[in-house]
Amino acid sequence: MRKKTLVAYFSASGTTARAAKALAEAVGADLHEIVPERLYSTADLNWNDRSSRSSMEMNDAAARPEIKSKVAGMDDYEVVFVGFPIWWYVAPRIIETFLESYDFSGKTVVPFATSGGSDMGGTEAILKKRCSAQTDWRPGKMLNGRQSDKALRSWADGLGL
Ligand SMILES: Cc1cc2nc3c(=O)[nH]c(=O)nc-3n(C[C@H](O)[C@H](O)[C@H](O)COP(=O)(O)O)c2cc1C
Image 1 (cartoon, rainbow, N blue to C red):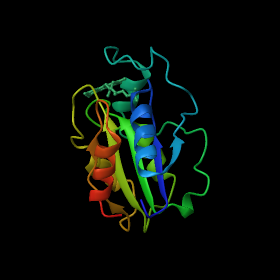
Image 2: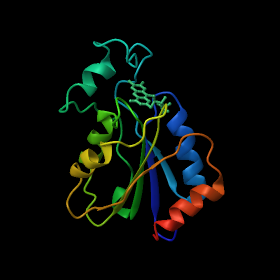
Image 3: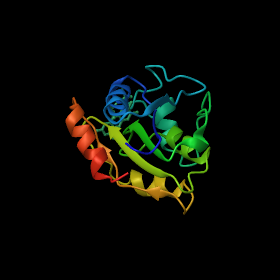
């Protein structure tokens, strides 16, 4: 990538982290993990339990789990890839916390995700609304399975950034 690029990601169990690292390496971007103030335990992630933390958060459109630290020098990045696992067909609420924490005006934002099989569904429309209208929001991509350097680079090249 010619532009200064950041790959920021949230990953509860490591899958999105792997995809994010591969993407950052393939496109020569900096990597930033979005770490929750309170980490998710296995019980928190139990989608069969209606009262688990993840179930409660995903049932509450206004939930904004806190993030431990800010991206250093966000102002300098021109392109920000934002990665997350799909939870209940959309992005975890912490991604909305992340997007609302910065002004992405004039920056390009590109989502990517991993899942057990679901696609991006309605999440892009929701996430886009969490950024200013001056954000260059691009369609995202599912990065399930091992992604080759070549495939990741050709996706990024195709964005023309
Ligand atoms: C609370 C919760 C809800 C999930 N909902 C979905 C879903 O709607 N569709 C799907 O395909 N996978 C779903 N998954 C599976 C994750 O998207 C998948 O395992 C993902 O790769 C995990 O990424 P991570 O290891 O980076 O956290 C869900 C997982 C959790 C914990």
